Length: 470
Image 1 (tube, one colour):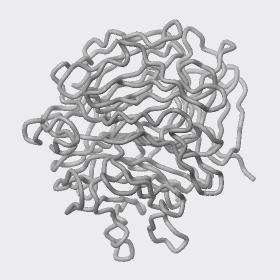
Image 2 (image 1 turned 30 degrees about the vertical axis):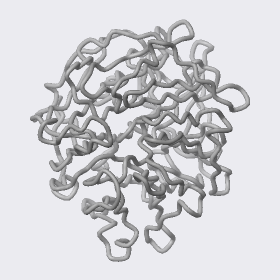
Image 3 (image 1 turned 90 degrees about the vertical axis):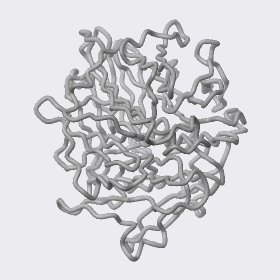
Image 4 (image 1 turned 135 degrees about the horizontal axis):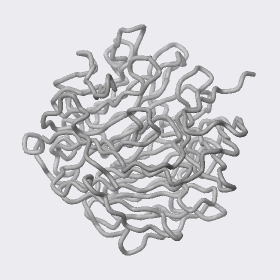
């Protein structure tokens, strides 16, 4: 399936890397890859003249920071995404270095948590993951941060321009050790939250539509108390219009929770799919543009795995160069870095949660320095369409749900707000069309329930869908 194209990275020495986020850092309309470095500089990799070049300024590079997870979203309604960086210099308890929340004003970046009025709100508890969350559906996001042994935090900007934690008010201040976090409309018409925990059951927070949430994982059948959850990703594998959940675990069975009509989930992983492994991140993406998403399991210290939806079940596929049997896998994302309509697979490697054994593996940071990897799927003549919904402020509408009808068949994607573990994918719904090159309809549903349909959009390009005017 994949060919190694890591030479596309202009400078790629061994380094301990963790999460990856895909966002437009410089405001030029193209996406960059932001790679978290553990006590080494964060990278901002930009596609320039056929190469990925690091363009991180000194503040974003933050070379002394123990960066772990990343997420981007527009929290202030200025049309540009801010960048949240989870720092983790402790496995549990309080940590020395607070998280960062970088915002850009013109061409000048600042850390909002470093401002005097926000210093008291900054997260000083060991944390494992972060995702974007628009709980009201207004287009202004918060950042949902999963701490280790503490409550979830939801950092939002108040009308006075200060950062406050709204998790308790929203009913999201559950205490656990969440690793994977994702947010999308999965059991309601608004953005819900799924967390998978290390040492406790999974959680599913249903959005009640008024800014509040209720936890319903056990009621819906996904609590699953096996104590090694790492990553979670949502996809509509079987095409029934309902999002299913895939949970990657550390030395436990991999899980496939299939959603049924009525909102309940049934565990439906086959024997090959559920095989235990040291999984850090899971990516769902249509790499071969055949119209069906594949599932990539990024492993730590053992071969990666790839599954495709074939004959109404998951079947293991050949990975090619992306197997990386000796890779110390951490972060992974799919992104179309060169604009050709094919998704590349970008892999980070390094310390397991900053070298803390409680997060799996116990690899020390110095012993786990490996280069980044870039893989391209083998070329096909399949058609494709990429859909980018925008908020009322012109920023990426993370959490929006996009449906596409091609050849009489309907596909669904959620625009990524948080993915796998440590990572956040590109804010685009990517669709393969198989042998077809004509699309019947695209439907975009925003987190506030607003719906726009586009009939017969041209294929093989990026379709930008603005939020409709009043």
